[in-house]
Length: 188
Image 1 (cartoon, rainbow, N blue to C red):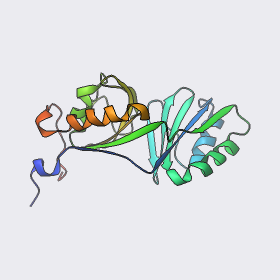
Image 2: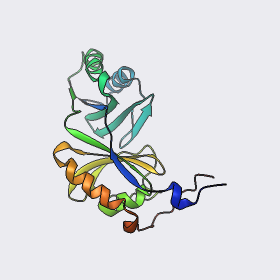
Image 3: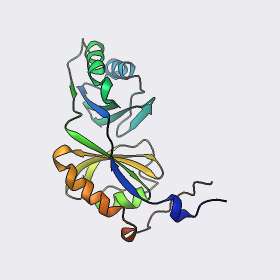
């Protein structure tokens, strides 16, 4: 017997631990550069405003000259060395930014939760799986993407993470639900 929607769709937020982040700045519009990054990181290269995932790694398009890679924290140093070798003939900057940002996992009515705080259009038509947004949540700069229809990840600066956590914790409360966006039934 399927669970009632209220049981399987309780919203929650938690801080993601154990993930490293690598900033890669280079002329990513050059095919040789994007291919070197993709091959080194072992993930397809994202298109503009996209994020790609493979085998526990993610690579996000941040701007015309920047990507952000996510991987297990213990792999960061080795991957930075690999990336420097892969980009040795190109002007580049590769840095461990794991300590600069905090990642949160939000589960539940994520479109409604995001819509409460961001000016970005997070409707299913305009914000699909694989899209990566840099915008604001409340007064804070943030980046976010959906991992499936009921899960999202949110990044913010570490110095603002306590405020972001508090904001998200309030936004996921059942009495704060706006129920604007329909949620897909997991049984179909």
